[in-house]
Image (tube, rainbow, N blue to C red; front, side, top):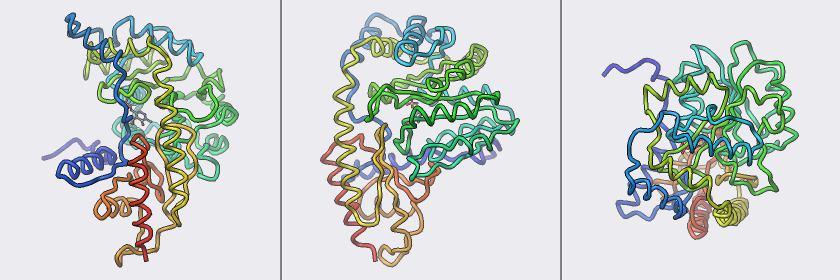
Length: 397
Ligand SMILES: Cc1ncc(COP(=O)(O)O)c(C=O)c1O
């Protein structure tokens, strides 16, 4: 079958693929430990479910305005003002089918062929693919583990060209869990002062912070960027609502209108009853998150300590999100049952095949030499998985 040529450079999501394989093995009765999940293992809080049920019960099941119901757009605008100190009117908010689709709408609305989008590696796997799907060119700036994966403002300055249309920030980060400090964000913001490009801040992990708050994004640290900032966020990670598919973008009016047009001609509105649930989540008690965050923190500590006890592995303590990114390149060159280890993809495959451990390779995140392990799973699973990883390493020649 002849397919669209713009798809030739696009790869399917490796995390979703690994998850599917791990799930299939588990369904076949195998004892799989999975660190592949990019989603909370907690259930969606009951009061949020109740709001959706109430919407269904009262027949709130029809199309809504593409951009979302007015009360939800207003609640998001209010949330951004109250929690993030950012001023976006409700008309500057677009409700989407997940933050992922907000990003998709954004790149489709923004990019012409060959336009550049600056990403910092390690990056979320979908950024480069989505940029390319919009015929743009991802420009990747590497960050270093030794610097806490903080981007270098001078490297950013040097990477800017007349074709740079946007720079994407994601702190706390998927996959590194790194949080960029306020001072560094301010320096990065200053690097963009005289360059007319969009600032995209993907704040989806803002609530999962293990350092003293408050959460700060690049525009908080460099407020002169406010007029050309797009905030991407959603309900998935903070409210354990991944399957509900509800995200949003807030940004310059003309851009949001263009994104809405794309949505008009593709998904239309996010599901109506889910919008009611999101409204309840945003207006509900703030303390539903506190027990989840403290449990994540305990798991993170357990995980990092255990990883650093395995000879040849090294792992920094992530300040946010629910991922650890241990360096495994220290194992490269050693052999597993006669085969020398050379890549994160190979290690990931060996771990699933021989130790029934699902660990996502760093390569598709621009982090070769690392594995991405999610701690959105129980402490018992973390201990069991650490044991398997330790046994795998002990078996290496
Ligand atoms: C950095 C980042 N941004 C956006 C998303 C998309 O979230 P959703 O589409 O579930 O709202 C994810 C999900 O894994 C993510 O890790």
